[in-house]
Image (tube, rainbow over all chains, first blue to last red; front, side, top):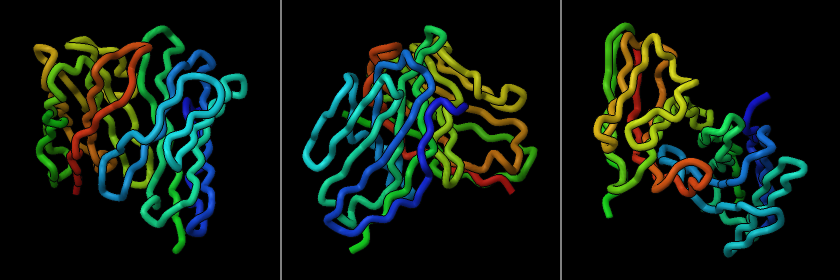
Length: 113
Length: 116
């Protein structure tokens, strides 16, 4: 089982719609969860972090965490063509007591104008 | 504040040759990471340093890859000998703290390796 799993996509949504991106993780003891955005040919940049169960909103972005289901999601409201990128889920995981920062494979999002 | 510096940006080598990548993290950042990102895939953690100690290198192919972080500041990743499947972008990142309190990672621009 992979430590962090995402659907690779592509996920295509029309401009103005809500894009929903999902991620599952294997280490039940993980405490820190992150969403990074990566444009083609560029390095990842952080867009959201979440540490507690529930929702966290920042502008058009909402991160959702459910530790019981080991599930993290990212909602992008009013999607814009500029949101077209690969979205990487990352978990700071430490099943053996030493923490390492693991990324999923990423979901490619296409927002259609 | 200066970001994470990496060099070289691009490198083309023949298989079985060697290559070295350099990374200078953000000043004061304790934790340094090397990731390998193959086209179309997510970043794969190769090695994670906390100061000048290794936290995790379980995914580092130690028969050909080596990395060091002398004096807990900059770091070098070496590949010798290179294989075709090593063609990838090598991303260096740093974070202010490590362990359970690790927050945002700051990435360099990456070093793109092509092995012919």
